[in-house]
Image 1: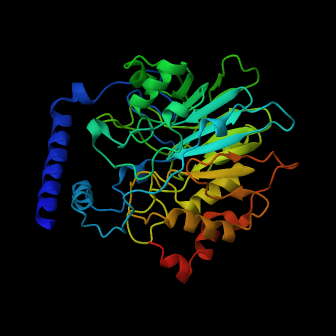
Image 2: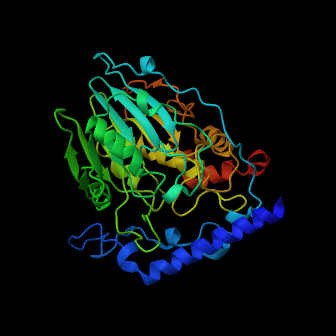
Image 3: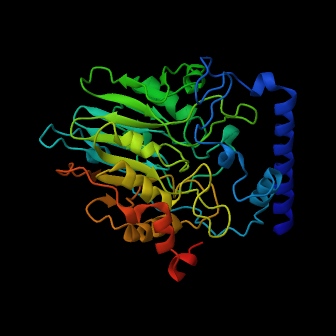
Length: 400
């Protein structure tokens, strides 16, 4: 069985090389211009950049050449831990997602659908983040295959009022899913600059905004989406790198704000504090997976792992957080259960005991507690350096 598999890997590797060459030969096709606008601190007139530096996001995860990275991934020669082919999921039923009744405090319910897709419900408002129902995270039915079915069947999804799209990578911007939701509900879609052009090419309307800009939510007085900074990059092909902007979001809501981190590395670590200044955060959606591309690695340039996720949670001052961006698509080398296990160890080290940041099951709706009476101060033990020292234990070192 090994010989055919290696031949298939070689053929796929050759295909990737051909696509890369095509990007150089036909840039007019692959290098689309998504956005035109004035030059500023993170846009040079052609491409976006992280103002805190792009050296980390430009490197191949784990080091080495990009060709070598793809070859090891395709041939299975990277010594990555085994993942399950499929994990059991009990999808939420329509009755479990019934509209919430107004009350004091304002009720809030969240259901993790998988990866970065989360349904957040309040009375009269349903919010969906980076909706991906695709079986594979990539173009032309190519890319990492889903190991967990969506936590809500698309047909059972309640009417959606607001969709947040963080950036244009295929595991976050799924055109087929968005088209179905647009045709069904015509939700308000908010994204960052340039990504609206991708959606509009398929007949999907969206509002695109720069970091720091707020978008009122239609017919919802007092509810607005602020597009906020994070640390990532964007591309749909090989040649259109950083033509569209990436972002996190703060949704101003009665009873406390919602923060959605999107897909992000740690960068300068100041962007969570910037989001915090927009008001108290009742619920934060923070990625914890796809962070390990070499043994012992705790983060990549474009992805935070649990160690940095706890620091983000602390700097946000969030009351509750749900870990996302793990356990759905295999994008990196860590074992399937490593992100939640490492998160539990990092939370233990953090000294944060009055707030919650723990995994939830895909498809299981959870009630989000109301905000506490005071805004929490940052915990010194939750700084990345302090957490790293505390996590240097035999139990953590054996986590692959």
